[in-house]
Length: 238
Image (cartoon, rainbow, N blue to C red; front, side):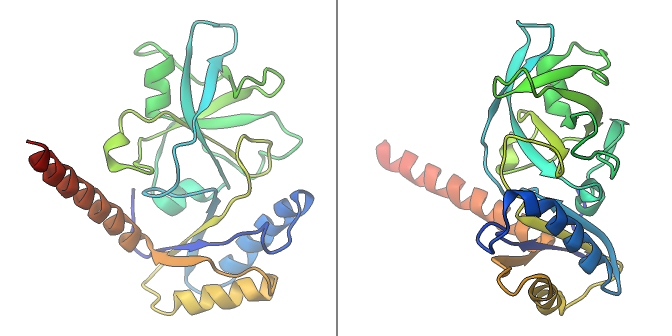
């Protein structure tokens, strides 16, 4: 996970009037417009990003192995997402622009996913799994990404996840997070991002803006507050 010179922009495409059949074109436009900004290196698009999000779990079943199953979180991402948040692909490949609505249904899974479903040393690449009990929509594992904390810093190591392409069917809704990596600090990125969104669609408002550093720090602050409250209430119960 790398946070230097990275900014998180949140949007709500559905609230801005974009229909299901329009979102893929919107994602491409977002990539193009933000890449056109001088200094921008990578543009990641996803449902949510490290140190935020939710823990919606879907039942995972390895195809052909009815006794091998777990629960995992699904995130949809574009081809530059992993680079934009500094997550390394350890085996196989990441999501690419060749992963389209008409190409084979694929996923990159994290290390915890592998630990939950495969034996030590077993190669997961090429294996297929279903999610949410839908046998007609099996994913082929094409890559393994390093573990990164999502939602709760304490879950890294115990949180199976799978990442699918934005352009393919998934268990989740619209992507609402844009990760912008720049070559140098840009103190005016918030206003630049707002103007860029307005240039795409005047109704595409920026819901939230934060540096990646601030998002990570905020999550640790939240965890420390929870820990303090638990200690306090634990003492009161004695």
